[in-house]
Image (cartoon, rainbow, N blue to C red; front, side, top):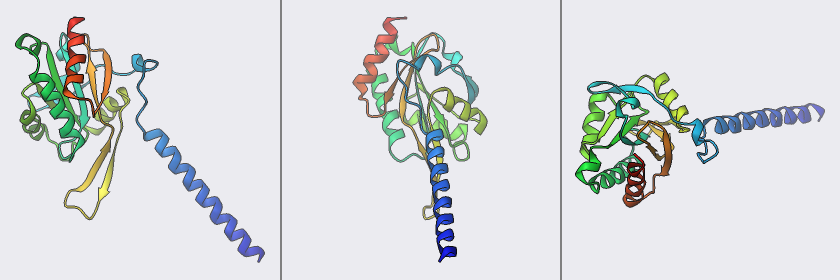
Length: 202
């Protein structure tokens, strides 16, 4: 009886440790809450690879940038967010369009080559540049912007795996400073209004 009690306690202890490890992993991997208190510590320059070579955020100095982090095989939130960005871009007048750009960062470099990304983003808008890079470079940008992603195995799917990721449209001002993250369910008019607000501050 005593042996059985010890075994039960050992199992409970192991389960408790595993639960704590799981909770710690969730805490570490979850996206940061972006608000007025910490937004000044997020964002910044980065360099990743496009079809035409290295692309840095600083290359867009003088432009308002709408940045999105996702992947080309994403079934829903990525195309929705890119469609919202595209509709907002289309509503700009010709002068405004010259001062606005979009960047799509793929966190799935195994499948998203720069060439594939170029084809993908141009389907939405010629104003969007698709970039990716080595995992270390991607992880650095993801951390810079308080974002999040993780690979999810899908052994029963032809895709092999999916990528779980946060979904925000990051608006960056003409000096390369993070201005505001918008949720993926923002409307094109919401995005347009924020872009024009930044253009007015230029």
